Figure (spheres, rainbow, N blue to C red):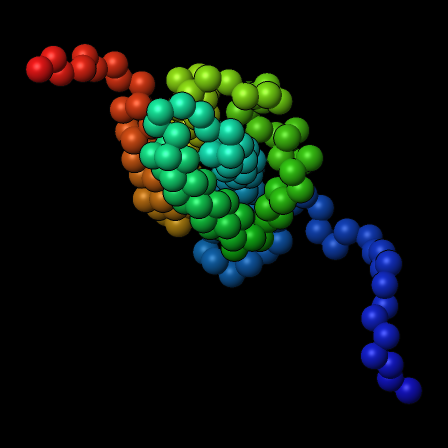
Length: 185
């Protein structure tokens, strides 16, 4: 007899371990897929932390540019959240396992942890720029290496989405740190 009662508290062994790839017919070698998954998971962990950093700074924003930065940081956070999903799906497409647990991502990320409290606005913006630079340096290096292994898909994702989005966001953020004199009338 069937029942509509959910089967709760199920447990099972892992069916694929993190750091492994399954064989998929995508015309890429095991080594190329393994390398790409390792590099993408590093970018993914850093991007997850950049997203969280954007949200934190969005929530605690202060000062005369509050409204503009509050909106900008939320927009950038949404764009980073989109990248998280795209990067994770690429890892899965390659037969890997995307880092999804925030505690696991914390072990992998190179993005420095901010203080738990609130920093001043220039420091928050600088912290975001530093996180972007970490991701962009890694993405540039990874893009060059995966293309040499024949992985055009990963290279395209890194260049057309991760790097282009990051560079654009850096431009918008960096302009908030430029000191310009007020016009005297």
